[in-house]
Length: 258
Image (cartoon, rainbow, N blue to C red; front, top):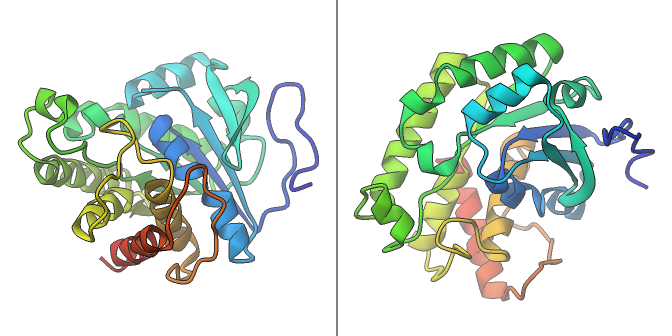
């Protein structure tokens, strides 16, 4: 087995991955994690991937959960739900993480004011409990063209929304001295530009096939520095044509170059 045990608190107590990745996120980090371990495995690379999931969770709510040490997060391990609920602190202390990612909930990601002071406090907490870990920001993505959610935010196009969220993540990265930004949002922009007709499954989450694949490739390539153009992963949850898989690989590679 890839891990040795899960203890009664739901924390994965031991893992033998070459790289260990923890995300304090929501459904968008679930999208990123769904194929991440398997994408790495297809490249003969061991990666332990843990996601702390609460649907629609904002940085403010992460901050409250951090302060209350609440076991509010469904633990996802290597893209799969475990049924265990955990707190941030015990997860931070359960392993020596190479990377920890943070993100703002998508509807608030366009405004840096909504990140503060929560992202600064979360960063301090992470660095105290996991001082050797590199902190990355997970750049989320724009909503689907003509969707009601996009209109509700006052945007005429996904490009306009992406421009604002990109700027906000860059400001956050400078402010907390993050070790980088994973360009998942840019990858989603590239998918559309490269001819992928549908990249969302519900106008805002990533599609279950090629879009999630492209995001996982972007994460994998960003953290490892390994090329993604020839990745051999094909175990998708929904049918993905070779044409779509090629667009996904090229879009991820372009995002990493940018």
